[in-house]
Image (cartoon, rainbow, N blue to C red; front, side):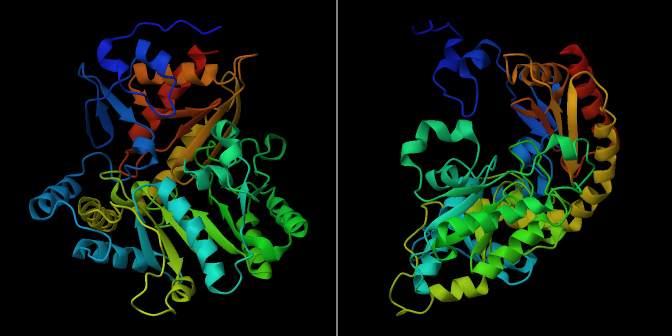
Length: 443
């Protein structure tokens, strides 16, 4: 029997919010109408500390004046440029800056507008690369359980979040398999930084390869640190073993760095922090501190070269977007990279990491807290679910935090924290203290 529609404020009805319990939200709306630095402002004038850098993206804080001015100046000069057969200087400048910042020989950039598009683009690059090399039989992708790679059909296929996949199972890519995730409370609960246990979980890739045959597998895609699943940190040695197995079998390794790039882990890219180099790397979010939608893929020289062997008058890769490398997004990206460098925000993130770690692990022993984990400026507190009501306890904690002037994120019964590198030590303390009070209130 259908549930009756509950009347809500008319001005809220037209919008269908993403990843949101719309009926609950429209009865209990949480609105922000302004932002600056570490804080949102609500329509009634309350300040709310942003404990998640927007959605893992505003790494220089909100409305950084240099990035704002760069966007305004670009709008006065050029609003839009065609991305097919014609382009604009800012896109080339930003691509060069990103190639220079990326590790090893990751040095060619394909722009998209989001992390979801970046992932689908990376998957297409992998398939086309193998075809260009005469190995078109490599069509399989290996993702990972609890992985999040956006909401395109490619990203859903390699992703491993059940709720995201189940309604679309009939239309997902064929031949995809998944590694097990690395979250294990028995062996890892309350780890600080990388867990010591779990590197062997990468060896499951050998079993998957044996099942499908290496010659059919195009790429393995993983988040170096799983963010959307609730800050699942890779065990020491895990990523290194994945890299070695991919090399052994001629399989490309893709790092989805949509969350981890541009300072979240105190470096330009997680590949640097972990010392493991992928063949392709996706980015978005922090590339311009969330100012204007922008994403992309950075590929190794050899991958790019494989596409550039035919006649010059032919298109090498039949893929792209109307807004690839949008002038406003690129202007924001160039300004953001300058801000990150000149204000030392990545170095600041490394110094703030221990402050966040100590603060969040002080929640151990609070009611219903079953795990705490952290890496870089990312942390998660996992709660025991209410019997028969999964995610309700975390939602109540989230609601109470927002009422008390702090915004964080919850997924299932996990609360995630990800302050921007501009945060002060006092603001990190405020974030965790507010969370502590909310956890006690939800007990």
